[in-house]
Length: 305
Image (cartoon, rainbow, N blue to C red; front, side):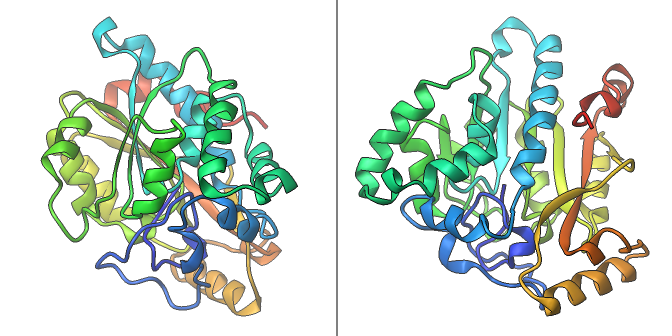
């Protein structure tokens, strides 16, 4: 759920990253102050009124992808390792591995009980909250995000097995990140792809021991082609779910909607009935080895409607 810290909320996901070399698009509202707080309360307070929902859409897709990869994994490779890029406070990990919904998390972090706690008290409360809701088929999730505070929180409450406050757009990976990412089978992104280049993906794919799947929810205002080309050079076929789009969040104002409509139109897509209805929308891009596209059809991994 993520992106880079100086991004606009068109890429808001669960993260708190620092600026990459790719500039944030003009026309998108910035929420810089919520991305790297000691805990995620400000994040949920700010995004709730805007109906931010990208992680909700990722939840079912990522669970189905993990289940598919688990069926083909050797016993020694289980549980499957997931690398959540731009992971922020670990929201994708929370939804993947626990019996909670995004709506539950909004209620949890904006509740009077949560509001009254210090960050240290919230961390203790959250450890119990997530432990009581842990799924039996939980994946091993490692997180990547330059936001030090957000990464620290996600690790402290047990959402991430490992977390790395690094930005692969601006610096080479640490040896510890390379060791942890070596076992990655699934890369997830629910925001922030607009701030990423092939550089981040190439770094991870180069060190991975086994074929990797990449599941990315990408705003319709941007192009995924450079990243898809990088993935193709590593033997991954990218499929785009074309049957429907996925709402990301409401626009903050008319100027932001105007930006989105113009950007989508410039990309050759039709915003009518989608961005014109008041929301940023994403498309799901799923990249895998060609044999996996046949064994696990994309339509079987999509949310039920």
